[in-house]
Length: 171
Image 1 (cartoon, rainbow, N blue to C red):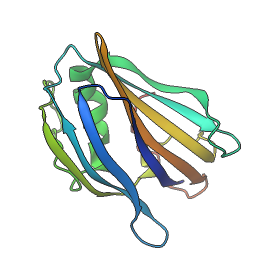
Image 2 (image 1 turned 120 degrees about the horizontal axis):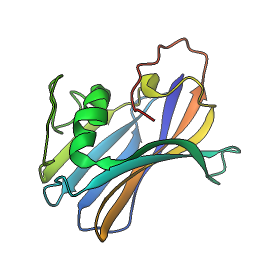
Image 3 (image 1 turned 135 degrees about the horizontal axis):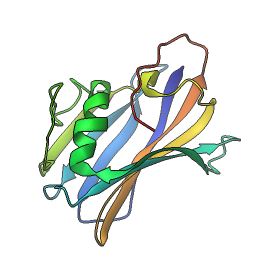
């Protein structure tokens, strides 16, 4: 299976984070995410995070929600569960926190400026039953009245590469 990034969107102003991330052509056949984002305040146990997926059957940006999602959970729990398992996807390409295997607590996620350099999508976290086509992943985090949504849109190019599924997100 292969992923090709299309774009990255941050929806709405939240007072939680500011994004300046772009998808750019890395070489003739590969796209990568580059840019910066700023977390404006420490994100503690009062924040919750979730991820949902939508599929465009015709590839025309008419997305329908897909039943696959990461259920809402406290950010601190997310960090030692989902984030810890998926951080290999961006390791050595960002200054985001790196959690050692076996970490049982990481809170709060520190405020600060973070950079992302040439993060190329790795399809090992995508379950093999996912159909080819245009996909959108929306990551949401909320705290009382504050909420923010962002996420990449990508194309699943093929499903028969023989790449081994790494598990990735728990959906």
